[in-house]
Amino acid sequence: MEKTVQELKVLIRELILEIGDLKERVTRLESGAVVQTPQESRPREELIRLQGEGYAQLGRLYQEGYHVCPAAYGEPRRDGCLFCIAFMEKE
Image (cartoon, rainbow, N blue to C red; front, side):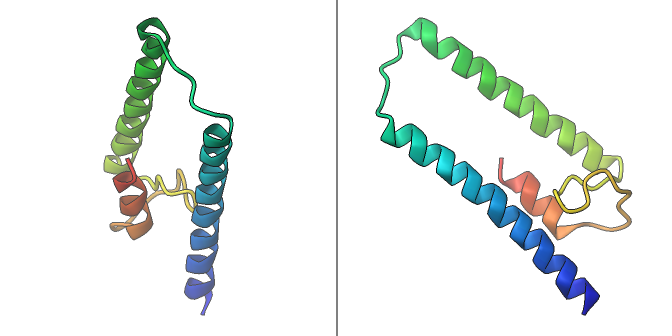
């Protein structure tokens, strides 16, 4: 029973994060598309590269035996965690 409650808490946290992301997307879409010049697109490329580095860091933490999922981030991991794996596959 306690495990089920914990799993539901994790799912709720993931849904809340996803809702926040979707709200941001809606806001950007409603504000209208902004035409970018090639110079303005460079920071976006840097952001994508930095985000990739973040996922690489999370991958290293996971390989070192720590949780990277929002529910148990930083806690030692004994076995594979489906939530961590799902989080890493979101990339």
